[in-house]
Length: 465
Picture: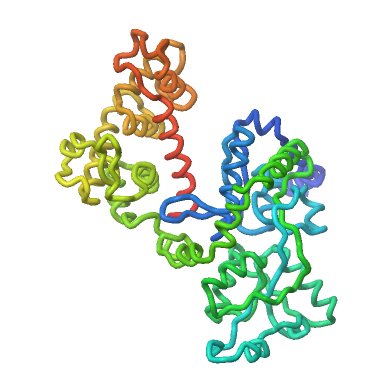
C-alpha cells in the first residue's frame, strides 16, 4: 500500500466517524452574540426593495420581532426551501422567517412556530385566449376544475416546496399520472406564475393568497382550482432552540391580537392595486431592478470617492428618499440635503438640480474622506466617521473622539467606542467637559444615521449588483 493510499484510508476512516454534530444555539447564545440571524427568500411578498425602501411581509414582521426581543435582526437569503432548512441545520441562521407550509415530513427537520396564516394550494393556469368575449360558463368549461383532468399533464413547481409532495400524493390518491417537475434552483413561485402567463409552461401551483394577488396583475390567469385542503403556514427554528421558539410564540400570540398585524398582511396580500403598481415598476427588483432614477449617476460619482454606489444610494435614501425637491426645516435642499453654504462651496449653483446636488454632495464626501484620512487610517472604519460627520459635522465627532480617549476607549473606532460618547453629547455632564469644544449635540441622531445607512446598504447588497 502506497503512502498516499494509506493517508486516504486514514482520512476516510476518520471522516466516517465524524458525523456532523447538531448545532445547539438557543436564545441565550443569540443574545450573547448580539444579533439574531433570520433566513428568508426574496419574493414580491416576503422581502424586497421598492424605490429604495426595504419592504415585505416577513421583513415587517421581523422588524416587529426585533423590537420585541431588543436585538438587531440580520437577514440571510436562501435559494429555495431545501436550502433554508439546510442553512438552519448548519447553524447559518437562527430561524426561517418565511411562510413554510407545515407538513409531517418537515416537522422531522424543524420545529414550527404557531401558525401565521392558513391557506391552500391552488393550480395556476391560463384562461382561454379569447376569454373576454366568452360567457362565464364557456370559460369554466375550458379550465381544469377537477384534478382528474390533470392526468398526463406536467406541472412545474418551486424546487423543494410542499407543492412537490402534495402533487405526488394527489397523483396517487386519484390514480392519475401527474408529471411533477421541479424548477431550477433559485426559481421562485412568482417567476413560475409569470412563466405560465407568458406561455413558457402550462401550469404551476402556488399558495392561494399569493396566487390570487398575482392574478390581479396577470388577468389572463386563473387560480381558483384547489389541489389541497387548507394548510397552515409558519416560521421554523431548530428543535434545540426551545427558548427561541417560546419567545416567538409568545410574541406571535400578542401581535395577532392587534390590528397592526392584519394591516401588514393586507398591505401585501390584499391590496391588489398597490401590488400591480409595484410589480409593473422599473424600481421593483423583479422587474427593472433599479434602486432609483439616478443609479447610473451614482455609479459614476461613487467611483470618484472609492465608495460602493449602493452605499451612496443608501445615504441619499436616508436624506431625501430620492426626492429632488426635498427640503428640511433647516433649509437643507435636494437629494443629498445640502445646506446652502455647503452647496455653494462645493459647486452647486442650483441645489434642486439632481446632477448638481449629487456632484456637490460627492465632493463634500471627498472632502470629509480627506479630512478623516489624517486621523482614521482604516478605510472601512473611516466611512463611519465620514457618515457621522455628514450628519452632525466633524467637530462634534472629534468631541466624541476626545471623550472616548479620555475614558480609555478607542478613539479610532466608531461602533462601541466613539459612538457611545456621541450619544453622551446630549448630557450636560459630558458636553460641559473640557474635552468638548462644540458643546451640545443630539447624539442619538448621528448614531442612528450611521446605523440606518449601513442596514439599508446591507439590504441593497443582497438585491442589486
